[in-house]
Length: 242
Length: 113
Image 1 (cartoon, rainbow over the protein chains, first blue to last red):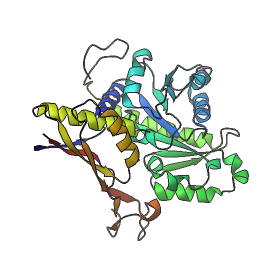
Image 2: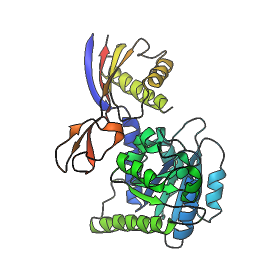
Image 3: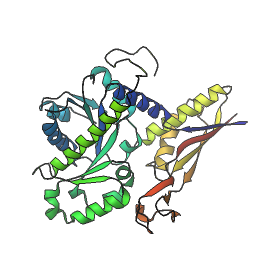
Image 4: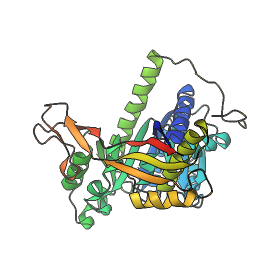
């Protein structure tokens, strides 16, 4: 018998492809946001509100992830921006390969911002890097104040938490202070935006912050332009190994 | 059930290692999994048992070492501890705590015949 040391990340297969996706996005000058949440927290509604306010200033594309149906991609396409639905079947998260494959039939060349709406699930999506610039979590007030403590990983890994449905706080039996405190404890550096897609409250603050994030990245890219490491597009069938 | 994808990652890495080292059967696979990763041991074992059949790892045992979540404070340097109730604010100075262990997800070694 012999023992062979490996000491390799188990998700290396995903992380390698995520790095490949990230490089492709960088080459295109594309800012990519991965939206995560529980089912029903309002990811698609947040995206609709965000796109309405940004589509005149940015060229936006959306990749939607769901187990079944193209309902969400249809909602986004109705706003006049390109949308692509990944139906995962029984898989509870998006991984880097699904996003990579989607890019073959959904070219992102010429876009400024790509939103990826992950499958509604508080556990699995957080383990899979997609090559995004930023993770944003949507947490609706009606899910209860204990969610950050019960599912700490996703909160901890998100750059921003959108505290959606604040108009329902009077009916949810929670306080805004309590919700924010629990998010803050689990993820002290996360930026929190209380908002409501129904009333529009707080949306402008979230949009202003997102625009700042995009501009900061664009300035950094401008000052330190990258020589493209690879120049292939995803509009053709691959014959090379990734 | 992302454990199925993780189990597949374990199996692929282990078989690749076996092939690169003579192609012998795999007897044991040792993993290090951080507490602050969403991996459920039972689900991982179940997935691994299902996919290892008919492969070089079909007799392999999966051994898992769980790595405790540990944090430290870069602000005051006071705390190097396990956070209570997933509170990542330093109990001494209130600064954000940094994770120093508990996010591992590594295949450490394989034992080959």
